[in-house]
Amino acid sequence: MTAGEVAVVFKRMLGALGVGGPSVDTVLATPRVRPGGTLSGEVRVQGGDLDFDVEYIALGLVTRVEIESGDNEHTGTSEFFQVRVSGPFHLGAGRRHAVPFGVPIPWETPITEAPGGPLPGATVGVRTELSVARAVDKGDLDPVAIMPLPSQERVLDAFARLGFHLKKADMEAGRIHGLHQRLPFFQEIEYYPPAQWAGRVNEVELTFVADPHGLAVVLEADKRGGLFTSGQDVYGRFQVGHDQALQMDWTAEIARWMDGLAHRRGHGMGW
Image (cartoon, rainbow, N blue to C red; front, side, top):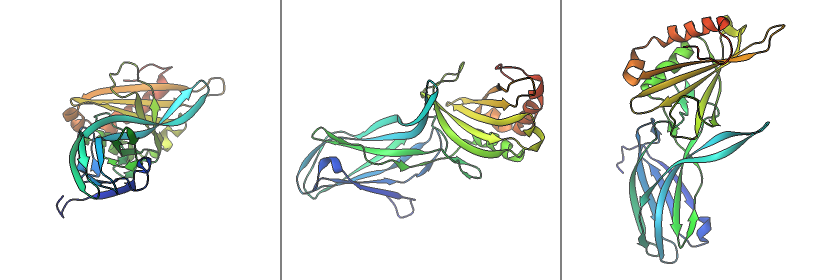
């Protein structure tokens, strides 16, 4: 690591290995990264009082996911990606061992940052796992900032320009019908609508499903019910390439979709 690198150091004792066991520092050279990018850094292992044979070191990406079960909902921790960054090696007592890494970030990784700052409720962390003598310590969840792709940022900017108020973001277990997903959950970014649409819509949820080639933008509007009608959800979907998304007038597209909500019924796609 050079002095110019931005490094965040997370230190923990591996309790599963007992007093006198190795300690691990995970040093991130890229604590802010985009989907499809690379999380780079170095795992530094400090030997304890005795010699140890380390079986492997692995890094995992973890987030919190909302899971529905019948009428109940609870939050669980989901490790959605893991890669081994080291094979077996011998760690002498008091010796140091460094393992550099470059971990690819899945394209569907939920974002934790928006152009205006952090997304409330959105968390992604890296977890260092070290296996010694078949005792595995998964360590603590250390946060990593996931920045939006430029194509995603254009959509988020449009919501801000239209006056939507960010409510929160969360991850929902499950899959979106008609979309190819690699991860078993998807992110919902929830907004309160501005005044011109607040009379018709309670809130709007935005979901991105990205891959190397493009981006699916899924909108869900929770329409208000009337005196003799119940509320309903209306969906919209747009599938575009990343370059195309940069050229789109998302402000106009989203405003047009919102204006048309009064004429749409049920659960069909609004695009």
